[in-house]
Length: 213
Image 1 (cartoon, rainbow, N blue to C red):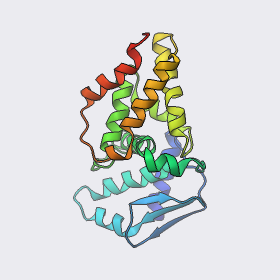
Image 2 (image 1 turned 180 degrees about the horizontal axis):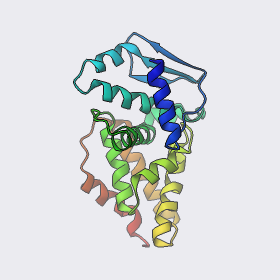
Image 3 (image 1 turned 135 degrees about the vertical axis):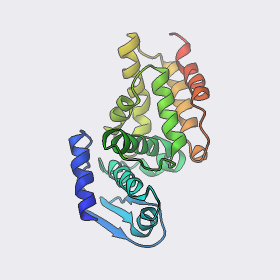
Image 4 (image 1 turned 180 degrees about the vertical axis):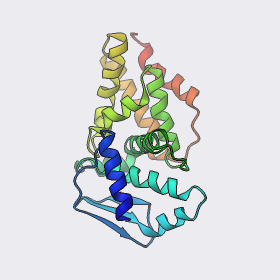
């Protein structure tokens, strides 16, 4: 486990996505998700779930993707707003972490992981990036600068900055309000297991930008 963690840490650092300081890395059994970062900066991975993954044909690659995903959550300490944001709109954080994890593991490392987790949220991010004609990696990297609990507050500003590079125009207040409302719709808890239609998402995102150019 320590060898895998060293590889993850070194890889993320090389890609400019360093994991923040953690108090300790803990691998334990029992039910639970694949992992989480606790408020005391413990990065916890559930060994039983990891061992289940390793028995799958693409398990080792998927395990590495899972480890990267959880490490990306560990970039900064949590804000006090994290629990509320995550309870209502987990897609802001999970779509960001999963999208970057897929880029790191598949596009950079050349592995072939299963990519089922948080797929709706990843595609929602990709759709808004395509709508403003930017690379989704730039959007994710911009939002990655925000701590857990701060991604929702940073979303409109980050999208506005990237769009302004292409158009030279800032979003008007009503456009920003519409963009925020659409983001809350796409990243809400109820969409976690949704089946994304990227073209339909783009049509929806476009309504935030049509008014006023």
